[in-house]
Structures are given as structure tokens and as C-alpha cells.
Length: 450
Image (cartoon, rainbow, N blue to C red; front, side, top):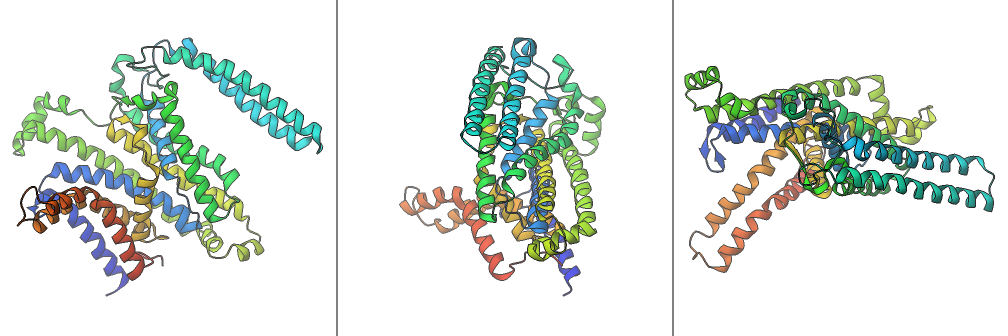
């Protein structure tokens, strides 16, 4: 069997799994197109995340396990762009918050410059410390007052600055702003990646992994605790949607008539319509990003990145700036993860900072890349679809195994209870098993890099 034919069969096989979920009621398949489209939408987002990580690892060998930090920044961008401004928030303390943040930034830059230009000695250390101390207390004096003013505005419903949506009470009519927020989420994640990369990319790969994980935790901790920014753990609900609302479709006589001609009731038809709309939007972005990634891979720049990945010493001997190239690819991969995070928040219609669990979801994205084939963009995308299908379907599979293995036991038998409880943890066991099997029998992934 040729490699091309094998790859085609893999793609057809994974596509068949989603089609079976929607069309067949058998074994673990639900026979629900609603379930299949929901799974497909999250798989498209997972494939985009996998593509971003593949740029960093597959192209450059950068071990980034702080993926969820960049995904969270993408979700934050959706709130900052698509939600309406909280009435009175800026006058109550918003401008004061911005002034405090500016003072903090000036303090940090001033301290760095002072430390760099003053001659070594006790005077340099004392002056730098004095500048940081004065700047910190000035920053807190201005910043804390602004935060208190903003968070006091109807804290049960708002208590934060809000976003840039100018629609006011009719802000949901501007759902297209959420699509605008997707690339802005990428820019926000890219900016954070630049700051992280300037400080951490000189570290060895294992230290880089620890640094990125720690910084991701810091980003998520800020989002959980700074209510003025995104309501913290109280969550931001009711994000506008770029696709029609189900209730609006159900009240549209033309749509109801079309649904009847399809043999569907308006409720089911409206749900399928909105999910299909999301799937089309996500597919457009995935195809565009995949095309750009392939162009980059086959360009002189892409060949240079793989040469750096394979032998940094030889690349440096040829005059390549390895650190600068690593920073480029780190920013690009993080930006793609930020776009995916903005998409995920849009699909959920809410920002939930507690949902960003770095170890859990970072592990899942890495399994997608490794199983699909690191260094191969198409392999990373294939891994995204396959692993997400497994992630969703493994739990009903675990319940089915529990039913089969305990069919002859009483309801209160310890073995039956144990198996039913273990079904909830079957996901992580299966992901680990799949990873071990792939590393043993196909260590370069299902679609290896050429």
C-alpha cells in the first residue's frame, strides 16, 4: 500500500466515524446528527490547536506545555471585543485602572533601563530597588481604587469593564464581532508569546516546558481573580453569536416551512442549522490556516526551521539566528492557539476561566499532535479529529464495557459498582493506551513527516 493511499484511507476512516455517529444507532453510536455536529465543531477547534502546537514542535522542536494560557487569552479577546461596555464603568474607575497599568509598565521598563545603564555596584542595586518600590506603591494606589470602583457596579450582573460592542442592550445583533475577535485573540496570544519567548526561549527544552506551564497558570489565575477584567469565576455569559439563534429561526415562518419540507420539526432543524453554521465558519478558518502552514512548511523559511530543529549547531554555523527563528515560530503557533481559544468561547457563548485546565487539555492536544504525526500539518489535523472523537466516545464505550462485564452480577455487587464508577475515568486510560500503542508501533504518527 502506498503512503498516499494509506493517508486517504485514514482520512476516510475518521470521516466515517463522524458520519456513523450521526446516522447509525448501533453499539456506542447515538444516531443523532445534533451530537455528531457538536462533536465535529469541537474537533475542528481541537484540530486548529493541534496545528498551532505542530508548528512549534513539528517545525522547531519547541516543547510548549502552556497551551491553555494562550487559549484562555483568545477567549478573553472575545469578551473584550464582542461584549457591550458596562454603563458607567470607565468613569467609575476604568481610566484609573488604565493609568495604574501604565504606571506599572513604566516602572518595569525604567527599572530594566536603569539596571542596564548604571555601573555595577551597590548604588545601582539601591536605585533600582528604590524605583521598583516607589513604582509599586504608586501603581497599587491608583490601580486598586479603579478596580474597586468598577467592581462595585452591579457585581451580581456585571462588575467589569465590558467590551467594545457598541450595540448596548441590542448588542447581540452584532454577532459578527465575535468573528472579528478570533484574529484579535490570535494577536493577543502572540503578544503574550513574544513576552514569554524573550525571557524563556533561551532555556533548555525541559526548562522551557516548565516555564510555559507556569506562565499559563499565571494567565489563568489572573483571569480567575481580576473581576474587573472578565468577571473572574462569576463568568461572562450571553456572548453574541455569529450564527442565528434557534428561537429566532423557530419564529421565522419561512424557516419553519423549509424544516417541514425536510421532514424535521422546527426545534431540531434550528439546532442543526446553527451547529452547521458554526461548522462552516470553523472549517473556513481551519482550511485557511492549514493552507498558510503548508505554504510556510514548503518555503525556504520552513526548510530553515526544520534544519534548525534537526541540528541547531550546524544552523548557527551557517549564520542562522536560532533564537530569533524560535521566537518567530513560538509566536505563530501561540497565535493559532489564541484563535482556537476565541472560537471555543464563541461556541460556548460564555467565558469560564475555571474550564481552562492546563494539564488536562494540554495533554489532549499533545496526544493529537503525536498520534497524527508531528511535523506533518495534515497529520496534526487528522489527529485532532481522531482523538477528539475518542475523547467523546470513550465514556459511552466504558459504560458499555461495564454493562457487558457485569451482566450476571447483582445491582449492589462490589464488582459492578466498581466497573460503573471506573467508566468515568476510562477517557484518560484510553488516551494513555493510544499514546503508548502509537509510540510503540508508529512512533512518527499515523501520517509521518516526509
